Amino acid sequence: MKAIILAAGRGSRMKDMTDDQPKCLVELHGKSLLQRQLIALRCAGINEIAIVTGYKRELLADFGLVEFHNPRWAETNMVSSLACAQAWLQDSSCIVSYSDIFYEAEAVVSLMESKALMALTFDSHWQKLWEKRFGDPLMDAETFRLRADGTVSEIGNKPESIAEIQGQYMGLLRFTPESWAEVMRIRSNLSSAECDRMHMTGTLQKLIDAERIPVVAIPYEKPWGEVDSAEDLNAYD
Image (cartoon, rainbow, N blue to C red; front, side, top):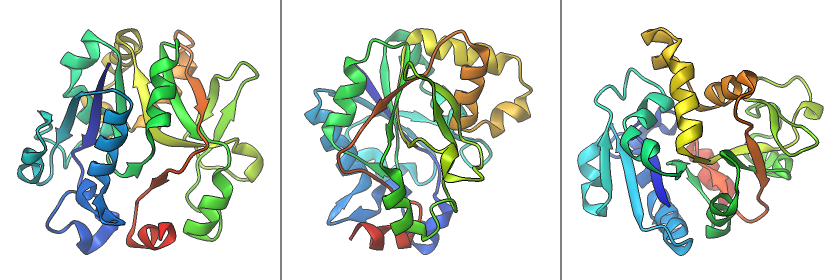
């Protein structure tokens, strides 16, 4: 299996921490987020790893990864960046990782072992982490609802209550050629501007609504985190 790390964006919420480097090079406990991802992926047995670059791409050249470049990184959202790696996504199953998260190899292995055509990891114990990061857990949380069979019925909307959140999506998922083909089918019915604006959770919701390929949710309970701000780094300290 292959892996693709999405590292095209700047991460403007990090302010001056990304003035001179991509967000994935921000360090947590002496290691960059990218280093942490590579360790987890390789410990899970994945050695074919690509990175989708954009902002400050030259600073990522020494990691020895296959590069897919999004020249329109400043104008497009995450799914357009992922589409730059279409050659891999059409060919075989791929783990896809946001570049601003950290996790352990077990999260990757759980996705690799899944038989689902589309799978993602989530944290069912998210609330304590969100309270630590934001104070009010609803401030930055998104809806995440599951069916009885473990598939996702809703993701990525603004919640009005904790009851609408059965977990938080981590930004780590696995596409198969079949599920990627369905994403491309959905995007083919959108305008260019709509495709440019398409973020990952919105795409997943469209995949769910189409009811052609279920999105399976895999719980993950080991350490992980998302780094959106300098305050996040303090929270993980």
